[in-house]
Length: 112
Ligand code: 5GP
Image (cartoon, rainbow, N blue to C red; front, side):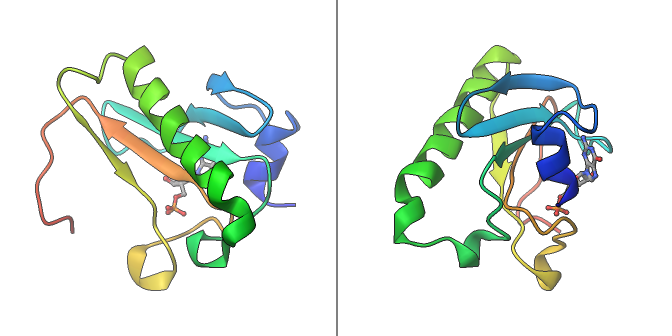
């Protein structure tokens, strides 16, 4: 089981923002912005490149939940960033697909 599967199963504690049948959103343990939340599917897809056509609805759901997290945590007006790290060069460190929602400060572009 990945660490995120354990969080989804409530075997490891996390500060949960929202959850439903398909996903759990919780605060990152090492936040990179004043708000840093991870939206994690309960289905343990390793990374985006491993998602299939069967996951079309789930992927859309994760983005809608990411927007809901941003709304609930007051990021809608100021803006926020949504990130998916896929693989080594992107800095992926947990092999369980997750959407980062970052906000609460200005962010530079291009990302590092
Ligand atoms: P990645 O680098 O794979 O895109 O993102 C993984 C994220 O998971 C990192 O930002 C890291 O801080 C976060 N993380 C790793 N382990 C835990 C944990 O046990 N609890 C929480 N809440 N976040 C974690």
